[in-house]
Image 1 (cartoon, protein in one colour):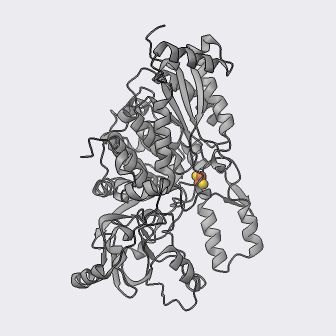
Image 2: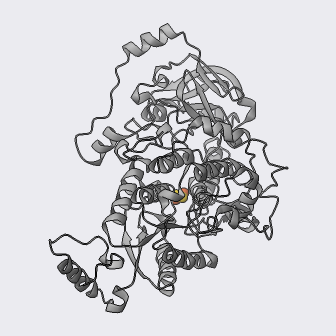
Length: 569
Ligand code: FES
């Protein structure tokens, strides 16, 4: 038997006799009905993630057929394999807890099984970062196919899309402006097709970031899930995977300091999700690239917001697709990008963007000289409340609150928040600053998207739409408001956020990039000495691994042992 190590011969099961291992593998593969001729081809694995608990991936069977067509037509054998799937709203306490688990699953199954290249099929919020983290660590040639966004629904003549409109209607319902009957009608119109959330939420942001990094086919990030172009993109992705075989275009090479900077520029110009900062930090970290919040601020100062999509603007992903999508956006950003970056197709980014865009709808994608906002959508804040940083999505916030000092109203946990936020006796005014503690990565809550604290009901009913809210939690990419997130170190790991008491004064200055607790150092030291931290100490299983290994938001909430052995610069 030959010594080739491609296709099924790759990484043989160890029985102490290589030829026997191959003979046995082929025999078992033939039990699935493959011919010897097909079994001698190179293999493209397909990391396949449909799940009854993942509505966003419900069209994956059809997409899989198209990917397989592309692989077969290009001369290789497609073999799909399942990994964990993470359906955002079906996971408790929060999907972030399981992102690293999915990345481990993806990495190990790519490495352990015989494949020459891999197609990653993901879409819902955590699946794209998990698959990219796994693929970078696995170091095999990889190309991603994203699910694509949902189409919008209709309610009384108005377009609705998950999930900015979910929150808008819910806020109106809480304020008594929308009746019970109407909110249940709206519920049926928010998510009406397969695919990921219809606005520039986390899933869409991560799809666009994957395109900016060069890890999905050009033009494929924004194709709606149910559009025939999505199937054509799937077929082309299968063919692209075959062309990757034997190349050096592995995910760990495509992700580098320059492509990560391109992705950060894209994130800022999109007015994309705050979650993407964590995910991009984690993906880059797997390739040995450090993303710092200082870098984010540096890039944010010189990257305009060019995309007019909810939650920052007005449009939906279907509009972004029709407007020219990432090709149009990246062309606008061209002078700011590292054009020499290699993409998964073998073209550099510059080669990809060499020709002019055929059409751009300027109501959705602005020219760089006429931006929707002159600076990037996200800004990092530092100060004695967040020594290692925090993030504010200024493009989705009320600028009137950007320079503000107010009294803290503190909730010590999610349970405390739920118990008291709507209490008519809660001592709170619109000028106060709502603070949520113990919702960061080291808390039992595992950093849920709880940073979008509801406006206390009694204020919502008076028409208050926004207040400063601060936490160590995350926020859904579809949410909006003057919300300071990812405060690091988090309260559960001893960060100063845990030292805030109701009645303290807090100052936010977006101009100075600062978030400060106006309490004397001596008092803070005394509070710290009196604090009895109660770190989570699960006895077994994945929860134990999570508690032992989880890193802070500034390190992408990755697990320490999953980062490169050589460490980060
Ligand atoms: Fe899957 Fe929003 S729930 S992308």
